[in-house]
Image (cartoon, rainbow, N blue to C red; front, side):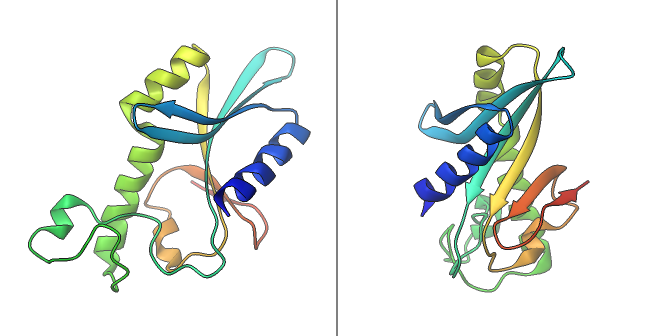
Length: 152
């Protein structure tokens, strides 16, 4: 499903005038899509897009942090019910690691120096919508099952 969802998002970006690169590697990690386009004839806009689509999700988008795992015996991908605080902590860390990690910033700057990046998350259905709480990060989000919404 991941490849299909990324292809669909890439097609939409291309039709909207973006040049895209999919699967940009940085060490063992990967950025799903990087997209740029020129606006108003001068300004270059950059989008870093992460795609995670499931229509029957079993687990959470964000893994448990090391601090939350502690001695609990849970695995990072545990689907066990989480508290609101755990969801908030994990979602913040997920957003930081997906969009704002230094390695990723260096790769983006190497590809397109001086571009100010916007962060976008495309998803299908979430196990727990609280993972997208407005406290998590500033990003644009699109669900493949609903209309676009903005997180600020």
